[in-house]
Image 1: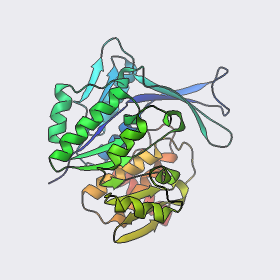
Image 2: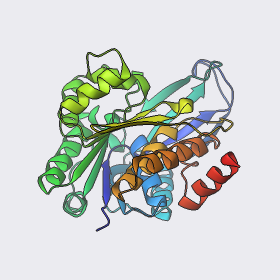
Image 3: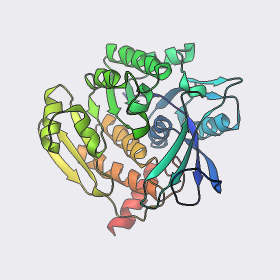
Image 4: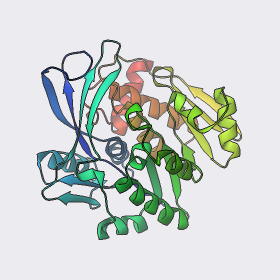
Length: 314
């Protein structure tokens, strides 16, 4: 049976400064809006690969919300669980790249439509029809999102479903009250853990990657995939460890690359693919994502991933 993937979390638009510098303390030329939100990018990638996919979220009754719903629908995502809130605004993120390649964000999430995502009848139906849940740390940073994500987790796990967890912890949200307890609660039920680099050490006292991964496996996590950006990715389970190198591409915009990686790995993992093959395609998805401006603009079909792999390996 083909499993249907659900995620719960924010849907945003992203607007990008075309100049480099530190923040928005003076007027900047901008491009966008681009469909965005880490869970939305993840689930768009899942849908583009043909895996059944759905998202529970909330947008405003505005152009930004319509832009996201149209993109997700076009890419095969079930948006029945996305509530359109009259009189509210869709979330947003303004981003400017610094000269060193790091990014400065100005978010409007907590006070936007997706700052609160109640369990609507449509969302409730998705909890019963989906077999796998993907949670990101951003969905646990707001009480109005967290409670719904944890409710989905309880329902899907009770039916024998599986959970993948990507901490996705931006510095702007690390100090959120109650976040740590929610992260630990989700981690304790995780089947597939997808941290990026140093995020691995947020959940363990170990100082070396392998020791940290082994400790987490000993606590019940089934499989771990460590995303290392341009250095590729590492897979760890109780009986296997492997590394797969990244593809060499010219980076334009890294936003959303980790989400595209995660959506691809989860899609292949759920289909029963060997971890090495899943990592290979996930690396390709992350690589392709960074070559395109806009966080959701670089999500990929299987054909596009195959084409990229042929070009980079040829």
